[in-house]
Amino acid sequence: MNRRSFLLSSAAVGVVALSAGRSWAQAAPLTILGSVPSLSFPFFVHMLNQIKAQAQEIGGTTLIESDGQNSAPKQTGDVEAAVVQKVDAIVISPLDVNSLAPAVEQAVQAGIPVVTIDRRVDGVDGILAHVGADNAKGGEAQANAIIAARPDGAKIFHLQGQPGAGPAIDRNKGVHAVLDGKDKYEIVFEQTANFARAEALSVTEAGLTAHGKPDVIVCANDDMALGAMEACEAAGHTDVLIYGFDALPEALAAVRDGKLAGTVEQFPGEQSRTAVRIAVDFARNGTKPAQSQVLLTPIVIGKDNLDKSERLSEAG
Image (cartoon, rainbow, N blue to C red; front, side, top):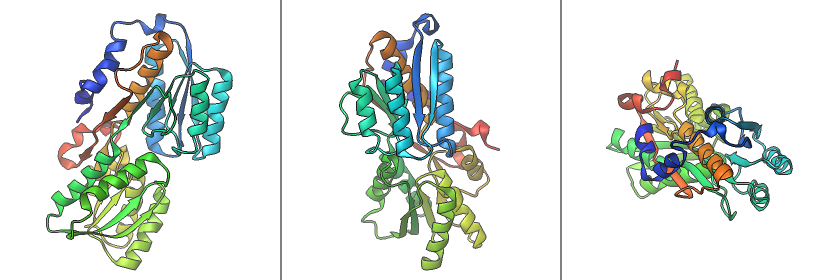
């Protein structure tokens, strides 16, 4: 599903229709908190930039930008401060789905509309909406790409994301849902690298030492895929198929150049923009979204469909 087809999907049409024909800038001014887990990750830099861009496009909004700094207490404190400040809405991608629940619940109880993006907060009633990708389907897409590329079977390393993060949990489920029970596809090494490139490099080196060269390395994000790529190149293993997730510009360039086999596009910019539109429409007009959960279907980007990626123009 590309960006245009998502915008025309039944889940999104209701959201877009709410905004059609309205002059946002003439409405009452709003203050919105936009919070992401950590700006040390390019994915979240892009996401926060798109939150800002949509807020500016709507007009009449003041955006408070929150960098969680990869710390649940820091992100919790930012949300709590926004509640005290009585912001009009919160758009948040939580670092940890459990640790952020009390702060999100506090915001909901204070009457502040909350829209989560990318990562859900389960167990909290009253969240206005969640906009994200179907990460389990993204994991399934990675696994199916492996099967298509290696129909005769494969020895696989699996680098998992940060424990407790919703996308990491769901992507892991998706990979296993497809590969488990298929004897030709053996995951011989599986370990978290916490979504971090440097950690993925060292984890992959450990896997190579313990298990030798794999046929495939599947990673829960692009930073880990790029770290795994560096480890394989240093070991002289340039024919390992490596799959990432997030379609970062650097990863797209590596796919284009044949260094990565593929990456998963989940359209984070469209997630962010849609979440802001939902939050603003409710804060200004009391209009609830047609659906409380809007999920985009991720796709695997390879050399043959690079044009479907959201950030190809940024690839060096």
